[in-house]
Image (cartoon, rainbow, N blue to C red; front, top):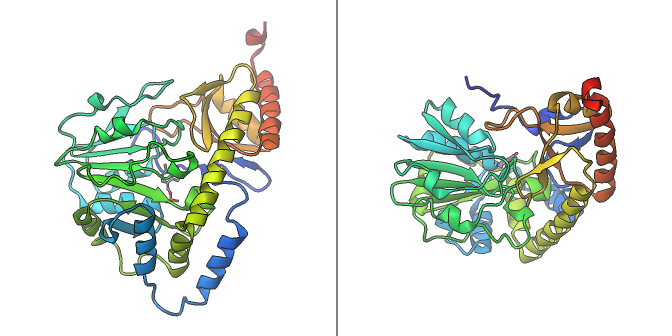
Length: 348
Ligand SMILES: Cc1ncc(COP(=O)(O)O)c(C=O)c1O
């Protein structure tokens, strides 16, 4: 048991008829060409999957050796594998952050410590991580704050005798991926976790990968079942790592930045934006967050509650970046809702 529900995720906020600002999967995805790849892959499902070509494609995309690539059923699988393969003496989780790493470590019986970054900037100070932590986990960019830590600050956490896990599930939402460590093979114990879920709209396929030293990758793979990644997911991995697909993802990331600016520009007074948002969602702080979220829901808008993230409160709401027309409609509703839920004393 913990103080917050670590198993709560944005999909639990959805219901038929609600506009989805709770789950950060890119709208309009997967693209038609990717659906065609998946359909074609179904022709080959009578045989067991061959992960070789997909592993080679991912390795080539990141300039790494295939032995340093672990293909997974989504980024979430990596956290379970870490919990099974490692026996950390001192695991430090940087929060507020995606909660599955902590949930997996706790489920495996490992003690965990939280390092809470301070609102509203949520800046990472590498010196705040205890020297003797032998497992450190953080996200970059971070869900739910949308903060992008400098690569140098994250890299400073790597050292011999420590596994440093950097969850880069949202890295491809940032144009040029300037702070990604995915290509770094010089940092001891670094494991970079990646996902196809967000940019490519493949949440239901379960497909991702991790990049790290070959011995660590082998230790994690030893806890996977045989054939852990299905043939259509392997086809998606190969297809989404081609230069053309990467260029498409880059264009989507650039458009996202424009759409995020449009959302920030229309937010009504009384709403605070926390951090310096760099990903496909923004973290907002509003007064009376719980009634506001429920009233938004009643009016057709699903946003992600903040209070199930360690370090956040009911006044925190995470909102996905959508097209500017949707953002404007949301901001108008939020403005009305903020007025509606204010108590008479607050208004006078
Ligand atoms: C930061 C972060 N990492 C990983 C995941 C899980 O990704 P996947 O669908 O690849 O398991 C999520 C999903 O919400 C996430 O927000």
